[in-house]
Image 1 (cartoon, rainbow, N blue to C red):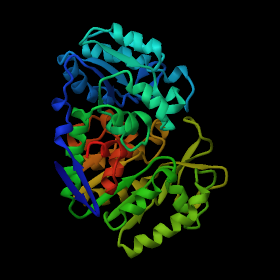
Image 2: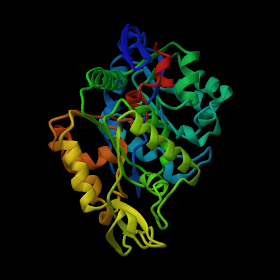
Image 3: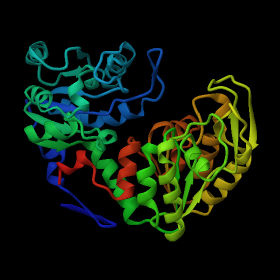
Length: 404
């Protein structure tokens, strides 16, 4: 039994539930992966999550299991969207395992069962996007039961979704013998060791669009981190709470009082909260919009903050340089647009230059590091933004609880 204590939370993680200890030979195995990769015009922009799933898939093939791979892609909210079909992922995965994969558009039901029954042992099928069915995100017992009926054994290797209480993550493993795969083992070991050995100064960098997604994490990290750098769209709620005009920048108005409360607690717990001193603003939310850099108190009406500015980059980079441990989750600007990518890339370079132990919480942050070929300079790039953040906070992940 692995035990991790962090704050007031104990994680107990059973080695006996590792996939190598499962009887999967000539069994039907439902393998929950996180194949939620960025796809544009049927081209996968970052395949890292798929690549990280290969070790478990190949192990199950070697054990002559019938492998029923399932995943979500994007947020279709229970309805079919052609742009979010897993068919593109299927084609990429076939090339990586050098084996034909049967694609199952029906997800559950008699047609799905028929396809699986006709498979040979050692073959692989891929179910269509689980979130095309409303029962996945609603944690629906009936949907989970129908998924479980497809298999003899359940294996979870979707670390990036372990923070979600969804049917395939928390219900199906209660209905079948449940095990975890190589990727989850790797993620837990890496992040556990990071958390166990954190030294001061510990710097956390949080970005992304909505403060509502991470405001709870900010609160939980007060007192644990010496510095929390806040950038991206989420920073403007705090900037507005400080009394500065933010033009048309994204802002969670209903979180302003909570932002003020967090800033007060940060002082009490001696955690520095850092916001950008200047920002690159755009006239419209458009990749080719007119843009310029202004001080944080000078955002004009009808303009919006879309990246951090030059002074902010220097200030944040200095804090990062002095850190011994760094956790980064989320871009500090609209990094998919060339005009507003500089801040995120500068943060990536600063983290890479640092001698600190560093973990990057997946998504756009990880993509920026990979795009700049800085992977070797980072201690660990996690496949799960939300999951790694919850782990670093010291909270229990619903998808890992089953293996306790």
